[in-house]
Amino acid sequence: MEILEATETDSFIDNLLAEAESKEVDEALAYYDLVVREIARLEGEIAEITSNTDREVQIIKSWALDRNVKFYDRIEFLQLKLESFIRAQDKKTIELPHGTLKLRAKPDKVEIIDLDLFMKSATKDLVIIKPEEIKPSLTNIKNWIKMTNKIPDGVAVIEGTAEFKLTLKEF
Image 1 (spheres, helix red, strand yellow):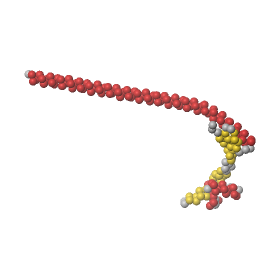
Image 2 (spheres, rainbow, N blue to C red; image 1 turned 135 degrees about the vertical axis):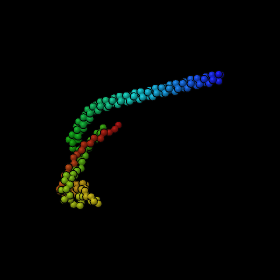
Image 3 (cartoon, rainbow, N blue to C red; image 1 turned 45 degrees about the vertical axis):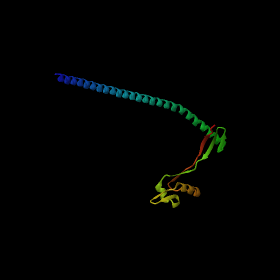
Image 4 (cartoon, rainbow, N blue to C red; image 1 turned 90 degrees about the vertical axis):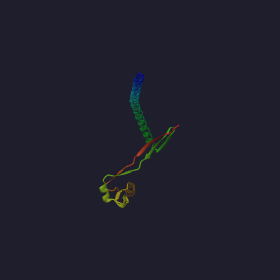
């Protein structure tokens, strides 16, 4: 009987140990599942904070843009006053303590308005010839117009204007 009792006792203890180990594993799984759940909650918090921050940044940028539009309008108005002043003085450059006013003539511009019409009367001096390609040479056309005072068919001349430029001095 003793042998039988020892086997039953060993079996009972083994069962208790197996059950305890099983509960331990279940508890560990439950604990780590709670850890995973906490990570998911924290990532949700991070996403919410990032979203709120992005909205706040957008609000601030919008406010700054609204404020700056007023300043840009004022700058544009003041630059027009400076341009009127330099034109009234009939000078190309005026040096001032805080900046320089300049009027610079922009060159005339040539534009092909009807390529077919232009190509019918164009000479080889007015085009660029590459293998398999012929296209107008705007520089040569502009020079030809200046030399001959004639505008080729299909070409428009856009006259250059004086451009105002303000250069601020940094201190």
